Length: 152
Image (cartoon, rainbow, N blue to C red; front, side):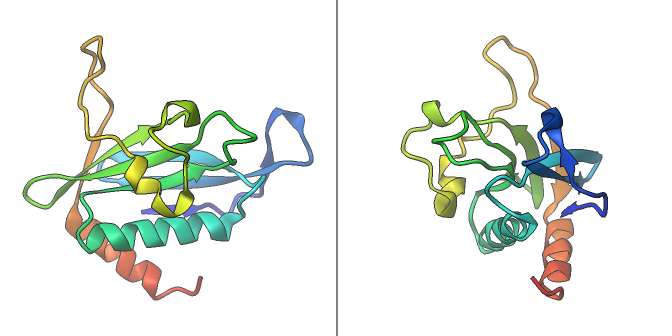
């Protein structure tokens, strides 16, 4: 499950002109809060990206991204997303990524965001494990079914 909380917008770095929304993701043992910049996208834009990415994932894509921080590449060095990787036996592996625009293989495009997701890695170059949580595909299906019964 990924959603925004009912908490009021926050203003990071004491900048009253750029609000941020507080969200939450729950997947298996993962239960984390995140903050999404509302500089360029509003809550509905994030939720729309999550829905379309999850729909494509459930319809056969091997990986998906749920963007939680988006500011265009001309005004930011990076974005943030939760990566979903289809595993064996209906298990989905979930990781948090902070991709930098300047190391992507092509100019970033929101509509094809999942195409920028690298293949799943479970360890860093130094041999340290990458934090990862597992959730069943059924839990994602139930969450998307619930989303599809709510207005956008």
